[in-house]
Length: 274
Image (cartoon, rainbow, N blue to C red; front, side, top):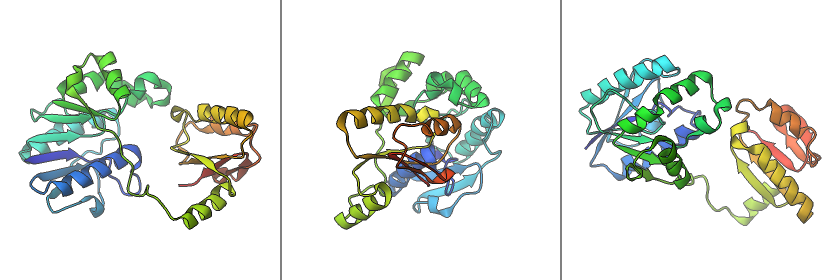
């Protein structure tokens, strides 16, 4: 089988959500299925580390897909043309968008409908694009993949898609998440939580991540349990984070919070740099 894959989010040192998802999924699929031939389609220069095995070919197609107009050109013209030229049996797109023009059967991954639930956190041109095209993408795709039963039901509810068309493929932990020796655990605990037990949040500092609600829950836990546990937050400053940072300055448990990125000190919460 010949499989074309939209891999435009595979960008060296900039993987984040979609990038890690595509990387972890396609690195395993390509290596585990040497009987199939894959064409990875990028919209810019890419690193050779994303060529996972000998059955992977690559191609850069223009223009770079960054805004609504270039999205449509890239997906409906460039991506469709490249997949057809490759004589692909399947076109896989794992970033929520797909081609509306190709006749090749498509597998589309839709992770969530955040743009419907949190429109204020989405850039305006992206929001418009989602509202205009999300239903079209879902109808066009031969099969849809999502990452949870909640997202599946959300898609069915809002777009009346036959739920038999939607497959749940749960996210898995990356290889870096694995058991470590007790000595390493002790060193990590001493370095990041001053020897205390801790909760861990991993994600960008952004309102959509619901970090403030987590902090409120942590406050209730501290008050009721009189615990010395810490809350470690690991992630980069994404966008629209100013309000969160300001609220943390008056946070009740701020004495042991170390916010390295801003050279400020708060309590019970440690922000770690990427």
